[in-house]
Amino acid sequence: MGGPHVTEEFDEALGRNGGERHADAVALGEADETWPKIVEDAARGTLKEVYAPVDDFGQERKPSLKEYPAIPWDKINLKQFNLIPKMAMRTLRRIGDGWGTFRIIPMESGRGCPYGCEFCTVTGFFGDSIRFRTNESVVSELLLLKARAKAKAARSLSFSSTTILPSTSSALNLCCATSSPRKRRCTGWRKSAPISCAMRNLWT
Image 1 (cartoon, rainbow, N blue to C red):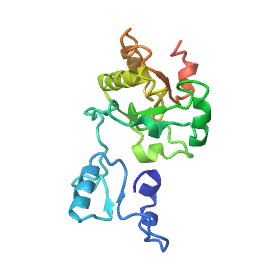
Image 2 (cartoon, one colour):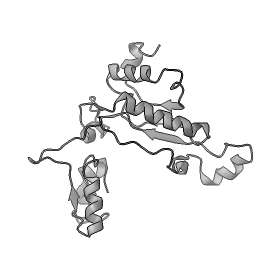
Image 3 (tube, rainbow, N blue to C red):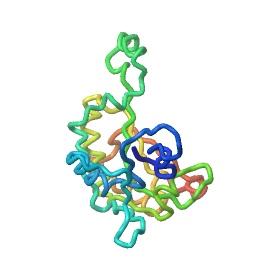
Image 4 (cartoon, rainbow, N blue to C red):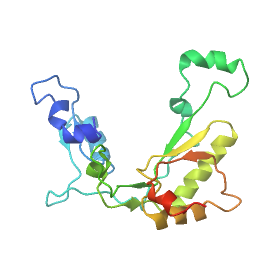
């Protein structure tokens, strides 16, 4: 198991607090670097209880997003992203082609958030400094998703980063990078953003 809750309460997941055990092993923090080790240990039958992304001095290490792995969206089964309840699919499909499908595809453009809201786990989990993917990497992934959208496989894209690239300059640079005729309107997309973006008239 992994994620924000498990990272904060890993004893709970392992049943160390007197409750039921929910996992054989837990991955703390971002598992980009630890996941291959977890898979290797599991295959060997030497799985440890806790895996943490730390350096030689025991300090947490945040992975860089500059060398971001290519996501094979052309091969991934997108049915898992369909938001239409199964009980409603058959009825909707009687209306016409495509009515039984509405998929929101998650896409990561960066990690971290400087705001530290008390109701949110993002700053604690990803850190208060912003790490970005390169514009080229994001655009390449958008174009791959655009090809799937043409086949009516994708309906909408959701950037899973905390905000629309919390750095104003990075947000504008990405928008410019996707504005050429070949890259424009890859597919419908959505993202959260700080109110300061609207106050500065950045998008008009």
